[in-house]
Length: 173
Image (cartoon, rainbow, N blue to C red; front, top):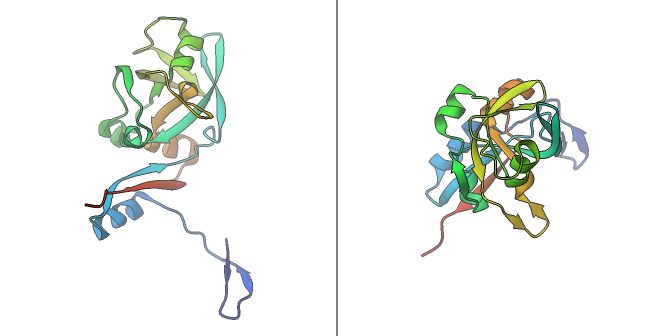
């Protein structure tokens, strides 16, 4: 919220600027050098780890709010079911895709979680996908739960702001 004025003094802005899907569309329209853009939003319960529940069982999960393009950047594969799709974004669906550890913690070893309900905050989400196990350096992907970005915007933020975008440029020839 601060900027330097013409004299070089730091001054607090009287306005706030937020990223939105309009910014994402503008970037894509402005250049042909972008492979894809993956927007993210940190929903109120998405600022790190959050409790997920199924019945009386609770586990800690890292909630990620994103789009179908999320998989392009993370190089992560589905074990079963499907990933978030554009219909989920349009409908602000209460669906989620869960990591392997979350599935084991909430449902038990080897139990198929698809079409089962889990609770995130006060909302119930239907599990539509299960990701393959993956750890990468200090990131444990198996503890992640992915929900549609538009669902997080509507249900936890009440606005259409994006927190950040990951832009992947095309490989040079």
